[in-house]
Amino acid sequence: MATIKDVARLAGVGTGTVSRALSGKGSVSADTRRKIEAAISSLSYRPSSIAQSLSNRKSGIIGVLLPHFGAGFYEKVLAVIEAELRAHGKYFVVATSASADDDSFDFLLSRDCDGILLFVSDARDRQIRALERKFETIAVVNRIVPGLEEKCFAADHVAGGRIAARALIESGRTRFAMISGPALRDDSLLRRKGFTEELAASGLSLADELVVEGDFRNEGGWTGCRALLARGLPFDALFCANDAMATGAMGCLAEAGLSVPGDVAVIGYDNLPYTRYLVPPLSTVDGEISETVRNAARHLLQHCYGVETENTHVLTPHFIARASHGAP
Image (tube, rainbow, N blue to C red; front, side, top):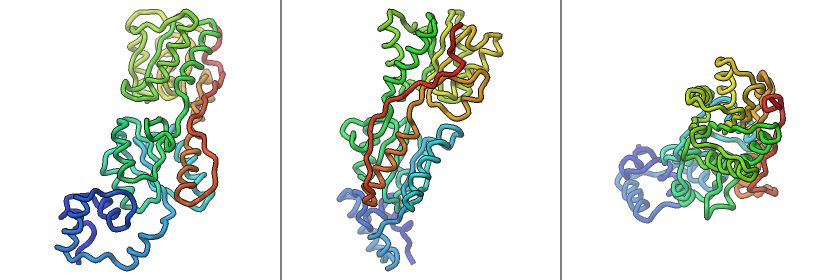
């Protein structure tokens, strides 16, 4: 007896595409639908009556697409999603893909997800638009895609960068360095933009030679800080585009015999729970990721299940002042 996998293989598409064609959930091009129908006819495939009846009902499952399962940041993200969905008797299934590839997305569709929450850091806007055309019930986290604003939820990362710069200026620092995130990441670019704009507003600057690209991981903070020190240019303030890199950078500074905040003030971004327990405790910009994810989950609860909610699409970060950025 033929299966849905046999149909997908013969039609040259994913099982998620076949599932959408059969259930009517999401969009399938006319050409692809013809290929699927031809494969169904050739294989004499017949969906079970149970599967057909289920296709017209809600599964109670939301798909979540993450870049990876890294500890810390995404642990916090998943905890918020679980709490919000479970409060309404719903569940979620997770796939990973930094670039929003079709295979991971189709995997979630093949699980009959009612909606999909996208946290795809390295995807281009056009890729996200393509996914939305394939399946309309999505919520995009941590970026605003032009044309899909009503389905997007993010912090004002420019404001977050400004907040970090202002805190360092007010602590009496004058020579600034930065470990940014990956060069093509929107959130990294926006944080740097806000940081440099706030410095410029006070007649200060961030020299290109004192900016290194990191990877949003502890190791990237360590190697980035080591690269900055190797350049031999003095700096007394360091803004890291996330807490993981700030943690690595503080370790590198300690190994180099430099004190925080005595020699170098350090500020991170994200306000991850462990940062209050570092030595010294890390000052950080809270990018409101928990509230951002909560709003995205509520958007899907509203559109998939009719749950009445009020959603905020762009949230304003705030500063968490601890010991790592104090006066020299």
